Image 1 (cartoon, rainbow, N blue to C red):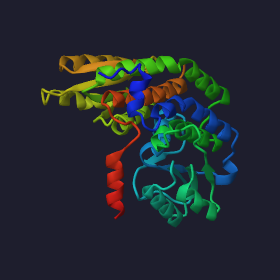
Image 2: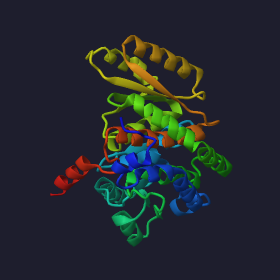
Image 3: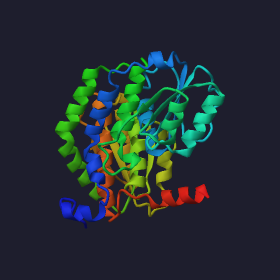
Length: 347
């Protein structure tokens, strides 16, 4: 097995410094928060009655987090759109937030055209590219960030920009209320606990190696389960799935029986902030999994509030997928089949 404590061994596979980008997660958060923390978008956008997030892959990470973390706070509906077209309800009272790290995602650019036809309100969030150029030309609201703390250059490794940026956009629109001090405390917590989180991710990656990980979470951590699945796919080149409590208790447990040779491991995102109902369900789910001869592991989140735990899980997922990639002797930066697909699609 690869020695994950040997920087030389890691460097053999990490050609574009994905580890550097992962360790810079907090720096990304500080940078985007300094940029957007005092922003007032209400005057630029106006009042809205619904929001559609248009983004693909890592560019949708912020939307996944917001949908779980602020579900009980948001007073208008939000919809995550991972497609070329927009839903039928979009109108002039809908804000379409176009998120593309590169600014060249064809599905997002298609949604820009669709939003214009529907006379929707539009806001772009990107590091540049065609999206930024088009919105500048049309004098539409636009937020452009400079990803200086993502040395790998991979959009999915700009998690801090994408997630805290999305939260700060909603704060600037007056749709969620997160005190600036709570964000500052969260980033300080991550700074102080980054080494611990890294080591725990490293240990759990060893337990998951050569198995198919299924990520289970609930409530405010549902977005994290989705993101960790994506990270395991792209970074670790590993098949992975995710499911949510309590929904999975109504069907998925019956699917654990076959085939007998499953090679599964369930990763629970465990939180003391779950409701008592959810804690009981998690414990019973763990019991059912064991009775079906499926292994399980837990990552216990230690943050004192939901925001800290969500961001701790984001950092954990980055390290976890990175170390699993190294154990598989894979370059975590490259995405050859995604690139192959895009090249064929463009012809």
